[in-house]
Length: 317
Image 1 (cartoon, one colour):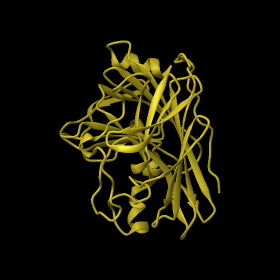
Image 2 (cartoon, one colour):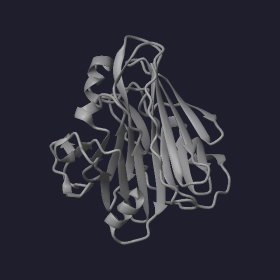
Image 3 (cartoon, helix red, strand yellow):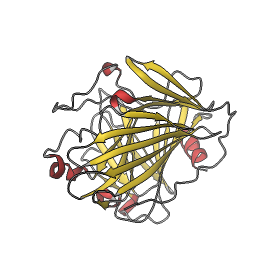
């Protein structure tokens, strides 16, 4: 089985001076043998030892857009541990989360091959391919193709789930990007949403300063509660202090997790001030030999105005 739709097209309004694709092997915050991808517009840092795309930033900048738990610099995850180690960065899990106990015998932490497991790395023409071991619970191998655009400040991650062992599973690709606390997060709601009001609350915490103006839903991080909302929006915008990131989910027909969510936004309370921008693919029944894949697109631009809504509308134009 192959389940795929066309990736979203990002407007070409953010072109920059292309200086050539480069891959450098670097140490990064205590981890050896990491990969720095650069196309002259943006840079991405991959940490194979913990299976993460750890950072995304404009070329030449030292501060990025992804949240990193610097208290865990250089540490590794023990797959036998019952504790979750929250490194930050970008990763993927199998959706829906409600099916985890059925396949791994516990609700938490996440399946071992999907979260913080060391991965093999192979360089490609525009980036790297990361390949995990086969997860013992789901029988799935995760392959993530991380690429930078030829001449734009854009990163694309094509995530494959390859079913290689065990009984059939019903699963979808779920990509989770932990990002620094924004000034605001925006979602572009569809013209006709399948969800009442355009979104659904997935946790009890109250979304902070949630607004809907036309098709634009926005919110900020709630410092005192765990908050999560889901939507059938395909595009999200993170507006930070110095830069803006647009994240697009690849769309296609099918049954989406969590009641029809294509994207989800989670905001974490203090003391760890981060948010998660998440994309989900439709659920598919996978038997041995089947695979599904989904592409998430990240476009980064420098911030140019004081108004976060203006920044979001410009990113979405």
